[in-house]
Length: 418
Image 1: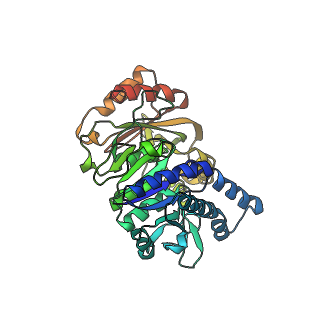
Image 2: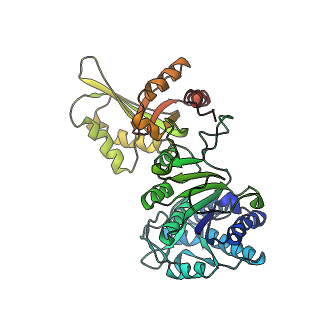
Image 3: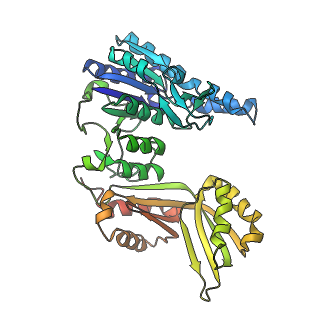
């Protein structure tokens, strides 16, 4: 089978870890699998390169920024190829422009247009491991581009789709996707499988195992993704085989490949939430637009929205959430448009957390919201905003209640039971 293996920054943080990751690759090659490897920069290296760009000039040229920060993956790809060769595995490194992985011209946040994989595929089919520098591509102008932070996951999934690989194995510092953060809930369990939609919700709501963009691409292209730990002993892990595997890690796959649908599969939380409240605005058509259009034009994403109308029906308060980092800009945008909005007061609060229950089984199971709200009320946890989708219910609460809320909901929906 043809397999794409991706190793994140912690998995290639130094020569010893690259060597360990190379042994995972060797295991797959010796099992008869054809392998392409995608690597990130060594842990912390990209931050260092970004820092140098800022130190060189605050208003740096994004084209040159891409030239600098993409070098981290180039180093790792070369080192991985050298180590693979040293342990008897035929290998060579590939940069994004050599494949080529063609992107648009949006430097530092480029999007993939296409991959021309004929040469790389011929190399892999000939028994050579292709070690690809993730995170980078080439623009129509011929300049190097980067895909944004976390772009190596996206590179790996895109390559797996282009090569029609059986699977894309993402090696990281955890051994799979858990029902919630094990650091917060000791009884959290590893999920053997999770659907694309559930993983997408968990990734967007605070779970850091996979990048949202890579999950979106995997779902759109039907690429099955296995989350695995590079810190497992390479000799104790079974090699990848055709068909569904849940021997190691967590398989992210289509809902139709799931053996059964739990009502709730996981609990996610995000601490980088801020609440904005616009007090005493007129309750009439166009008022909401006067608030959210300027925010949209400033590229500020709004999540939860709650509106409370006064008893006389003439005034209303409107509360919504933005990313905590965007709070100062959001407040300034609203102040700049005060004459149009005509609010009495404006308030912002960053001491908030968004807690979400996620599960495809919620589509066909009523009462999840009622159970959730009742359990939180029983712990005297006040809900300040709510948002829902077919497979998700999110609530905004005070940050001080994070651990208690997550543990309560994890137990409520039986996620601590095997």
